[in-house]
Length: 115
Length: 110
Image (tube, rainbow over all chains, first blue to last red; front, top):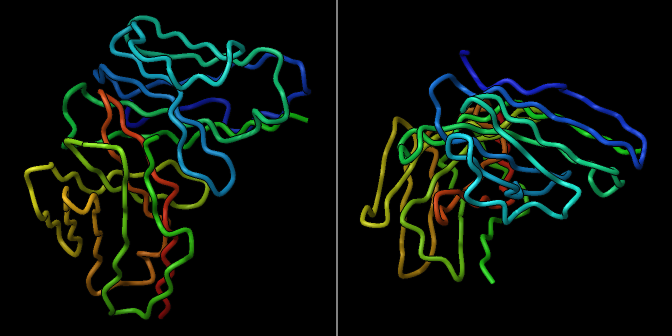
């Protein structure tokens, strides 16, 4: 597609429920990244994919968080048993691996609110 | 531990002046440093990348410097315009991913 697409754009969920956030990267981009941004804060790295594999999951805050990527394209970030502290904007970005000159292309994010 | 610091206070300047934003880091030795612009409700947008062996990079009204001794990058916008008002984030590479600062909000007043 023309850009990185994330869905849903907004999600309100009850504490304890599971949620799935989707990211559709730019076609041909081999690398995909998930970040989290809390109100007024910087971006917190969660996980990145090179193709379908995730060499670095070090940023996932707990074992309630997981992510997968299939076909080298769409990625899903799943949060199980959501807590109020999970409320944030979840941003996805993609890039051509090793092509730092062009930076990351970000989606507009999914705003997650846990009530 | 590794830290990236950007001034959390908003920078207010008059249209036409040069805006200078600072990014300091500790316990990193990044090979690359990037700057992004973020508008409310949107994801960050890539502006410039500078490598550790480059002292300065320019793109139109933007200029970035990278001092690996001081562990600091400066981001300049010359002839600033109200449309430049946004939050600007610096990002440092760390093993195939970038870590971001919390950003500095720039307000350019007409």
